Amino acid sequence: MVTETEQVVDRFLAAWKQASVDELLDFFTDDAVWRPMPMAPVTGKGALREALAGWLEGAVALDVEVKQQLSNATTVMHERTDRFSLGGEEHETPVCAVFEIDDGRIAAWREYFDMSPYAQD
Image (cartoon, rainbow, N blue to C red; front, side):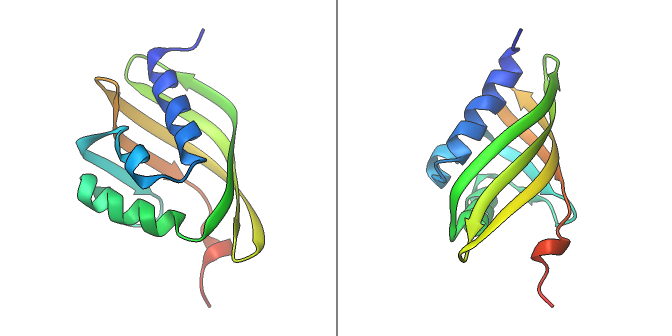
C-alpha cells in the first residue's frame, strides 16, 4: 500500500523528469531545506529556485528509477538511480534520499550520492 507521503514524493519525481523549476517549487514548503550531500544546504523557495535551475541547467533526458522505498506518516526514504544526459554525456548516479513531508509538501530533502564523477579537476 502506497502512503500519502509516498504519493507526494512519487509526484515530485515525476515532475523532476519534466525539469520545470516552477512545477517543482510547488512541492515545497516556503521554508524547505534541500541538502544534496556533500554540498551546503539550500533553504527557502528563493534559494531552491536558484539551486534547482542550476542543477537542471543543460540536463536532458532525465529519468529516475526508485529501487526501494519505505515511509511513514511524515517521512519517505528511498534508494534510486538518476539518469540524465549532460553535455552529450550519459550519466547514471545511485542516490539515497530522505524526504520529510509536512501537510502534503516537502519540508526537508536530503540526498546522499557520490559527487566525484562530476568534480572539476
